[in-house]
Each structure stands twice: as structure tokens, then as C-alpha cells.
Length: 197
Image (tube, rainbow, N blue to C red):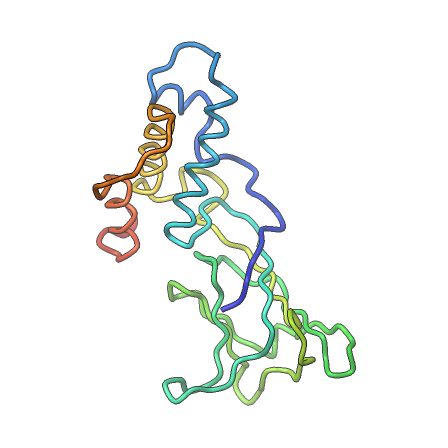
């Protein structure tokens, strides 16, 4: 897998300020800026814990080389890191003449049915020859459950609230000694113990 970065951020947060304040039972606006920061921090924590992106956004992932077929694979397969993947926008590479090229979508297949989306050459095709240099291949793709927080599974939304509450009420650094409720919710989703909740 490669390294990805967000190139187009979500248009809405996982929680609004008012939703977070309602959950935290806060009536004043004194901590609104802090709460907004904590919403982002809690969302980032949960996204990184699951290796996911929740609300629709675009990422670019770079690779140093194209994959070769392994004994365990029927064909060479490129695995994308962020998920769930909605679609692949483009695959751009630097060829051996140091010219940037776009790989035609008719020449590859994208499998969105697995947790880690994968890309393979179409039948009878092969991955292009790319320059032997770092970041020679860039895949731009769209990830997330949907455009709104309501599209994200309820277990994730609740885990974010729990992490947010913990951050708000425990304002000093401390060591967690026990498995948390938010981790339990995220792990159950991670291992498909409840899908679609």
C-alpha cells in the first residue's frame, strides 16, 4: 500500500457544535471553539483507528512501483489504503521517458467489494511501465460513507461522541488502563460484528 493525503476535505463535520453541546449537556457558548477542535480531534482519532474516512472526501495515494503478481494472487493487484472507496477518479504515472501519463480507465478494473479496494489490469492488459523513482504512480479516489454524517454507521457516530466526551471532561494527559467503550464499538465494526447499524 502507498501513502495517501486528503486533497478535498469533507464539506460537513461529523458533529455540529450544537449537536456536540447537546450531547455534553452544555448550555453556554464559552467553550464553542474548544468543542469544535475536539470534534475534529475525535473524528480524526476514530478515522485513524479504523483506517477509514467517514464523510465523502477525495484523497491522493502515491506508490513507488506497480505490483507484481504473487504466488497467492492470480494477477498483480494494487491495494488502496483509505476506505470505504466510492470511486477511482484517476491513475496518473510517470513513464520511463519521464513523461506524465494518465492510465485509461478502460485498461484497469476496480474492486470496491472488499474492505481494502483493489485495482487490477483489465483482462489481457498489464500495469504500465513506470519510472523507477519514488511517488511515480498516483491514484486519486473518493472515499467515505456519504455526504452527510447520517450516512456513517451509528456505531461510528457514537464512538466519536464518546471520544469527544472523554476529551472534554478529562483535560489533562493520562494513561488509559482499560479497554474503552469507543474502542469496543469501533472494533465491532472493524470486524463486521454489526454491519449497517
